[in-house]
Image (cartoon, rainbow, N blue to C red; front, side, top):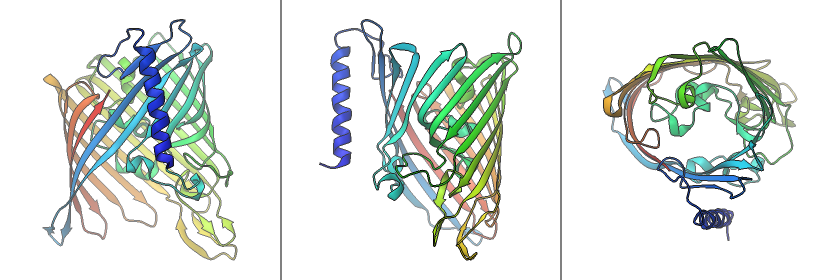
Length: 399
């Protein structure tokens, strides 16, 4: 029996046990609220099981001179995930587990992950131990750029931007301390501090570099968004007053051994690993009012010495992705939940070409982000290389 088979068996058994328990007590199983939603009779624990699937079709055309070349089309299950969350012992101790089952979710197996597929996306517990202080422990997304922390299930366009794919710090294993307070009756401030391993998710080897330290400050001058709408694409809540969240994040990866902080390629040398301090700055903002939404992000990455070298000083060929990225997007949600959106992304990475991408999106929300169809058309400009045109169509169902 393969590891995949074992994982499916264990997951199925857990699901069957949960469903069997749930059959003994009525619970809220409305679509979008979880396939199974159970609270123990003595209220000492709860569990919600919510699978989700994204099916994607994508067609790309490269420009050959001034003419559009022959298109290439692909179809795939972009994401297929099992999500479990709830509380244990007390509602102040929350847990979240998320498993990825699609090829894209599992990609990245290497000696650093025990040569095993990377099934685990999130495995984290969150303890509200004192007033507005919450301690997170485990593997989950770091408090980096907003677009990454927004779930892939809740995106305004088919997928994230060029900024995210080049500058995100994604997931890692460690601790996060979160707190919020009010400056006035409405003005909310949130603070996040994180210490992580610094090499990404599902790492099984010893810590090869230093550690990763991340901080983030968020300012909400007009109060909190409805249903955490500042971490969800589109203006589905149709805020009756203007809501704004402006944030700044700083990430320092001490003695990093990968080309994109805790992401990218390991900088292997003839005597081990090249190590250098990598710093990333994130600034972002999101605004919503009525059916209108607007989001902007800026990222900048620097390294003490970006060129990876062998012991004798010769270059290995690997270089830290230093540079800047900018992303701005906006949309309007019409009656009956049809949305038109647009995005402009630009990245300028040292030693590589400048990229500009223009995207026009169209979405129909049948049950919010839980059941939707999205499409977008993107034009990619590349310095010194041929441009590219891409069309995508995606269906999402999330129980």
